[in-house]
Image 1 (cartoon, rainbow, N blue to C red):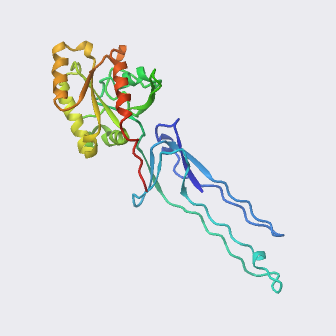
Image 2: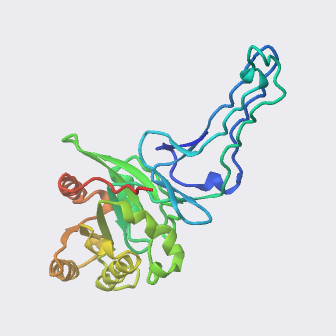
Length: 296
């Protein structure tokens, strides 16, 4: 058989870009004197937790690799019976046997939808990677240019009260991401299984954009990609508040609170107000259902 197993040390499907064909070991033919042939060995393939295995031709979901139990994706062949199996007292050397059956062979498509409790969303260069780096052991590339993060980063946030949760730094989204702009589809699908979203906004507008417009645009892209995301619990996080005036912070706070969102002003780089934000995040998670799994 060919089995797939979730591996928490993997976060991308990059390894599968270069190897396209996977085959389990063949068994051996039987021998004389009623000797059975050796059975072939299973092939175990490790993938990131949250990988969806689909039939490449039909798109049918075969398995959601999200649990700790291996999933059988392709069944191996069945061994045959040699002529001695059919021997009788009157027919001691039959001239026939039953051949074995070939194992399954087909093309699959792998689609990764990371499993995380919390997803960080927002425009590029607003401080998502900085935030995950100061609250977890994740070590994302951090630089002062857009799209520094090109693959999601996962980190485990552990709090002093013993609570912990998995956070995903989703690469920066832009307008029309739901239509594929800026690799939008590649990034947005990772948001689908996050239980709670932290929407990070540069509240100072240091990139030359309006924070309120940024907030509206990203939320609209989430809704267009999957209407369910419009209902996903979200906290609005105003980062870089050291660069913003009190008036800018107050204006943005009123804007998001009028829409029903909680607001936290932070300075991720120096951890200002990050602790209360993480405590509130853990509190909300304790009341939310578990991460969604897909059934074939």
